[in-house]
Image (cartoon, rainbow, N blue to C red):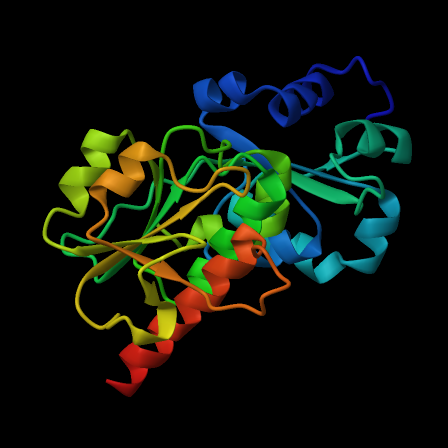
Length: 258
């Protein structure tokens, strides 16, 4: 059992949790909790390293056995203090793993792309990725100013979407190249067209900006039209993640009906 916070493996995990550049350098990040372990098994992703407490081992022996078959390496037993030091949560779940950063390619001709412009709140980004995966989006492009997709809070909020959804950080020139043959709509408070009036069936990209100032100049310039969600007069705006969900599931509804 690992009981020392000075253990090199423990320090490695703590650095991955807090250092974006280190995660990029190592091409690895940390996942926590039973749901993430189940996602790893489902997608046959072999963790680099697995850590668990005695209580978790006793309660989740079947999952631990399946993870062991994936890694072909023994997991590392740690005490509660070490798990708390490595975890990014207030209540550590008792298990965490270091996993390789996925690199899922975009389809050659994506049917629907979500472009996120300056989403710098990790919880919002995690929710948007989870929602995009649920709505059947073909890929997500992270524009400049968006938070790192392997940020622990993003990882936690995405609920496994990182393992099944193409997600690529790009500059605006690269984004433009991806969507050059697509209709591009930007969501704004004062958009030209209600989201239900847009035809979402052709190849389409949707730009969602950050809550503070919305999409930036580059995103607005790229867009071929602007879309809005009609609201009661007393409400100024929606949370960016909620707005994305409303529009994405309208697009899915139209595509399934069509």
